[in-house]
Amino acid sequence: MVNSMENYAKKFLIKMPANLGDGNGYRIKLYKNEKEAAILESNGETYGFEVIAEITGNDFYSDDAIAARDGTLLILEIERRWLVKIPDHIKEYPYHLIEQAYLAPENGFQGRIRRLDDRFIYTEKARTGSAASRIENERYITAEEYERLKERTILNTVKKKRYLIPYGGLKFELDVFENTVETGYAIMEAELPEESTAIELPDFVEIVREVTEDEYYTNRNFASMDKIKLLK
Picture 1: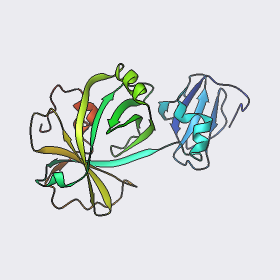
Picture 2: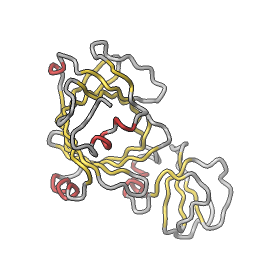
Picture 3: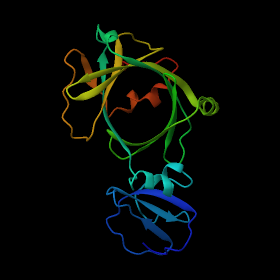
Picture 4: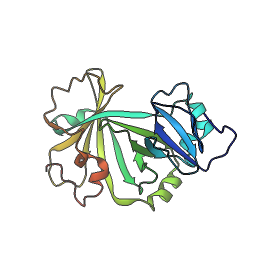
């Protein structure tokens, strides 16, 4: 860490550098419970460090917010996704009603607002370089905040029914979308503790194919469609 007393105008979330040597014009901040990332403070230059996203003014990365997470910088969502056929008995499972819409990307983050039944959530995501893992920061917002942010959304609102399927020690979520070209198909996903976690797929769900690495099958891409096409 250098120039510890200087105030810098910009903050960046960066991948942990291999070399933490001194440098003029920037400061690197490390956190005890974070081994994969660090914070670079500078006046705008990134000095060759691998930037994940700019976090200047981002409340998720304020000193107080980081302290509340005990020094964790990367809150990762690790999940895999499959295109599936909807099981005949899917209505036996509990579900959530979801509508979500997207804000214009900013500083490497994709903002999203979601209504989950009667709750409202703001989420921002950033890529990590892995198709299965993304940084995910979220907080609950009021209905009034949701409506204000909705005025700033882009593309179309995605509406779906999310069925919850516990199986093999994991919770699978099967999304049945409104306004689709085809009927009988859905996207199923599972959130994992690690990318290497072994998965036992529900034996009553017919898998068409895994789509984890296919950007076509993201909700953000579905929001760009006037009518969602699940088969391409």
